[in-house]
Picture 1 (cartoon, rainbow, N blue to C red):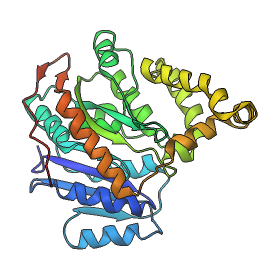
Picture 2: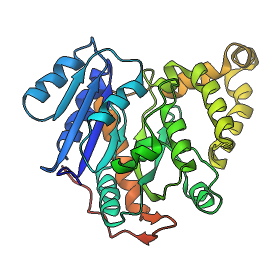
Picture 3: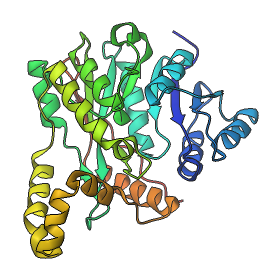
Picture 4: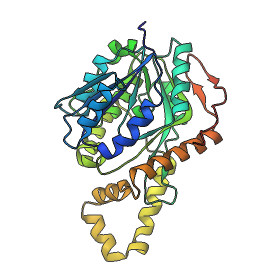
Length: 322
């Protein structure tokens, strides 16, 4: 056991506008027995200087800024530096629900047989009146507990025990959708995992997201990864019905000429680009996502699911009114 309870790992490159909102939220949560490890990919937009100032002030405990070979390379450098018993991955442009993070941390401390905890979460599609698309992963996780067939989960919701890294290995540096491969590897390994049914994050799709910037490579790589692990598609029924309904209505709302052009002129690229356009400043985006997480977790009392331990968590503290 180390003398640090958890390491919060953040990797970033050229995302200063979002970083100015995500990093203060992270640093406001840090306790004396915890650390923040930040790896920057030699940013040129002021991110490196912003983070270096926080490191010199003692707010960030470990900081490295140098060219890297992509997100997985940066994550591996951070993992090898981490000293905490637990590891929590934090991204520079997504929003986290800290009471849920702390509940997962407490669970792992009390349940040493569990290697890691995932949480439910949401993606964003800013074209919709309600832009938050829930993951609804509980049925899939329950099926995994009985069949052990690998499933896709978002590592945004993952809190991992560092001692299990010899069994999991580091992130695959040859692919872009790193959490897809890592979650399939975790759920195929001889490890006991848990799911917290509360909502731990909102993934804010935006033009700088890897999923968007490299969408063609991501799509083809995800299919190969699923095939390698023999994992089925994990698109929820609700999301599939939503996509089908929007596709069916498109000729009526856009007109037949525009609809035909979209169908044959890189339709997937247009679909993703429209969904990821964030119509707010980052301050408002974070505020909306945090409000949604607070309300969602107020209505959905989370519980832990695992083969080793299953119990309902105590009530989370009320949301801050600040």
